[in-house]
Image (tube, rainbow, N blue to C red; front, side):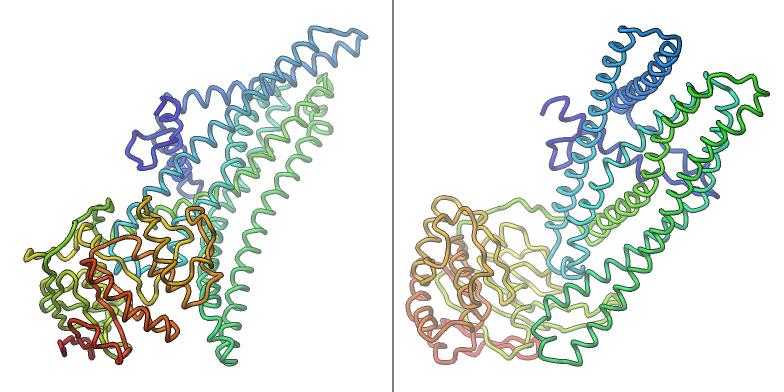
Length: 577
């Protein structure tokens, strides 16, 4: 990685490098709080590293100096024009300064954007890595909306605030330079400007805390609305079949939508107050220069036109600062959400290594007295319990698991595959007891198609041989013609029927070439011919290759295909054949 890339925070996806300019800028943004009560304490932050931040600040100061110089040149040339003089050198100097002004502004904007987006990229990938190291149990305890917000949506909102905030900082520096120039033109005009700006600051301090609280409330309302929206999409079939349920969900959606609306209206009103105050102050400043300045100066003030021009130029930076104030509240709210999400992930337990490991084969897997308790709520109430799970598996063996819905079959499969950490009992591989958090190498023994399986839009993780196995499996399952010619470019699983999606999922599992194939009621959505082909032809072929199969099944006519059958009832497993 180049020095520039390191400095700007680009390319370190794992976040293992030194703290970058982007990290410093985000940290500074998160610590920047303006509160009418405790502002003195909250403005005491640790300044970022001087090297990268100093260079960026130097370029911003250069841009502000050039912007002020443009005004100075224009006023000087206007004075020459009044005396019917014209300076070519002034025009040339104007062009040079304007070019430097534009280049330095673009450099600041690009450098800040590059640094902050690099820091956001590292934060996003670091948090994703931590999340993907959690157990399934911990991830299931978090809502899908919160997961999506923490991994994607918060970053999208934060990225939209970057440019307005950078422009606001540039505007602040430019306003300081303009104010110095205004004092040079007229001390009285400078004092008037400070008074007006002071009124703006007081106005912002009076609304900052209320704006932040309103943004927090609006964010929570939006999160609830997003959760309910997901419920509507996921449960659309159920809603269309039950008018009362449909109406109740619709009523709640309307209520949540209005709650979000009210909070957004309040936030918009506060922001509107800031803009109105800014515009009013701008007019007040111009009026003060025109009407009050001559009186205060006792008629001795000259160059009113130049002072008015300077004031007009100052209005632009003031507008940029006011616009950035609202973006600051949004950015701080979103940054807080990202930090809380990462802290929640870290609090949910130690992240194991997500790096893949492989065991070429096994001689035996033994589960003895495994038990597991689902947590039914955030209050640690006891949910469904798998109280005793005993099962043995050998290479080339087909084990069927039967039982009524809700008897604990899926939980048993997740325990056996290492997705759930057991609360007790013993799970052993080749005679060696595994820890509660099964190592990744053990989980790599399994290729799975759960009842709630998810199909990615691309066959991730397959090498050349894997693609060859996928092609063969798709042909054998009769759905190769339903997919694009180039599987590596991806596909749309939503164009397939439920049975076809399950066949694709099985083909992908076979392509992974794992020692154990774990199938949760795979044949339930297949037509009779496909079901017959699977049990009588595919299953024996898989066993002949030395692979083991753990299969949840209700197909009694095919129980003779099992080498061993276990039955589950009320969380208890017993061998029946």
